[in-house]
Amino acid sequence: IINPIEVEKKYDLVFFARLSKEKGIGDLIQALAIIKKKRLNISLCIIGGGTTEPWKTLAEENDVFENIHWAGFLPTQEDVHKMASMANISVLPTYHDMISGTILESLFLKIPVVAYNVGSIHEVNEKEEIISLVDKLDVEGLAKAIEYLFDNPNIQKERAEKGYIRANEMFVHSDEEIRESLLNAYYSVIKDFK
Image (cartoon, rainbow, N blue to C red; front, side, top):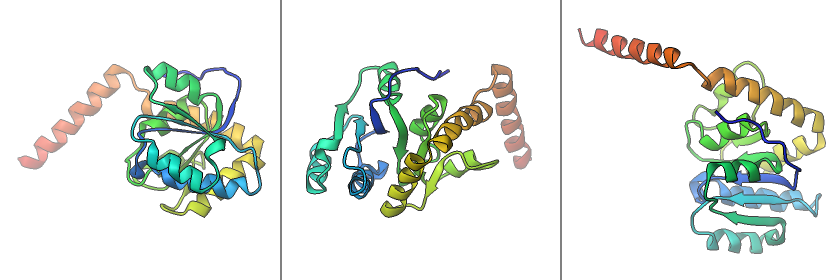
């Protein structure tokens, strides 16, 4: 169970995941450079383990190194959640997750999300738009989706609230519901073999 954390906002954006190309960190750094043309003081907090050097070099090449707080690997999930909650928007342009833990945690923490439309992430938007979805590798689209939320604080707040509700609908179940779901899945598979 993840509960929202009330903390003072310090960052515009947060990325919390493994620092790798597949998680879209490079795309986010490039989108940050696009946004910086209009918002000089845009800030991004990057939380996660992995090699930072190629990403720091990319940030320098795109003139956004000073706009990024490199938090690195944090020792506990609670530390990650507290720091992530200091941001207004969570961005995870992952290339091929089903639905990432980062996205789920962001929804539970009431942080609106911008992500690439890959895997089953779109299922969160089944009833209404909650996550801002962008075509994979569309860095300009990523920047536009982030800017849209900046320009519309009411939508930002609304998506944070609706995201929390949707996460609870989709992912919080009693032990009995989980047991019953697993048994039904097993019965279905066994029935197919008869």
